[in-house]
Image (cartoon, rainbow, N blue to C red; front, side, top):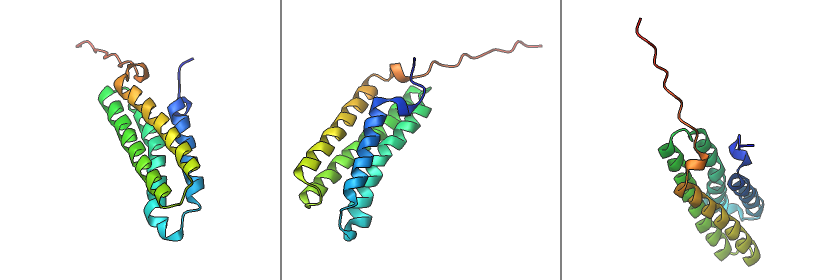
Length: 134
């Protein structure tokens, strides 16, 4: 059976899991980080899932699909940087940092694979029906 929804993709499931784990650990961040690091890391981690859903919706057009996947890749890199800031600021432990970075790296590698080889995910073009002249 073929994949019917982006939610069925392993990369989506891993990205969603990461976003939820980020949400949980950021609950402990200090109040002064609410609009800075907390908001930023939550937004970037969630944006991977949102952009994956958009990519899935645009998979009829290879360039659009790859463009949205590239946006996802950018968000994973932003999440990675924010995780480093969170660790170096003492907001997450080394074990939490390692686990979150590892999951983020998995997502990043899967996205890279999809970007390099988008064909299995693309929809077939819709045939153009010519209407005969009357």
